[in-house]
Image (cartoon, rainbow, N blue to C red; front, side, top):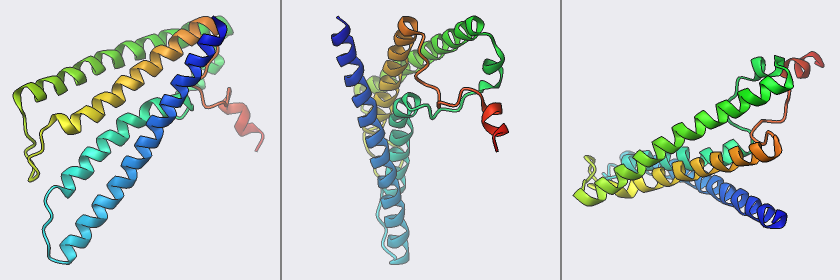
Length: 181
């Protein structure tokens, strides 16, 4: 049983890494589309959809990067108060914060998926010059939120079992780290 859980943990961490790679690719896509937009304007050529495409890539980068960033401790946390708490109240506070965050992101994920489904069902098109079916750019954003919700559930269960804080940046006390300078 323990080896199966460890294998699942490794598989999920690989999924989060893949999402990080997708987010990085989307950031490269933003740079390419913006550069193409600038160059095409300088050349006096209109290429429709470049600005919209950059916006869609930004949404994908932002949402696909959530799970990877959370797992690697890159999300902003206010640890100043947590570090002052004794271990038991700190554990309860960590658990409460993670549970609330998981619930909120699961709620958002549900409505993101619902938005994609509605856009698909009604054939909504973007207002931009590309007239792209809206579910196409919405789907990556919903997928990114879904993986983030999965990551939060994964880390919540892992925390309940091990009491191990896997989402922190590693510095337990920012005040101690600064005093060594």
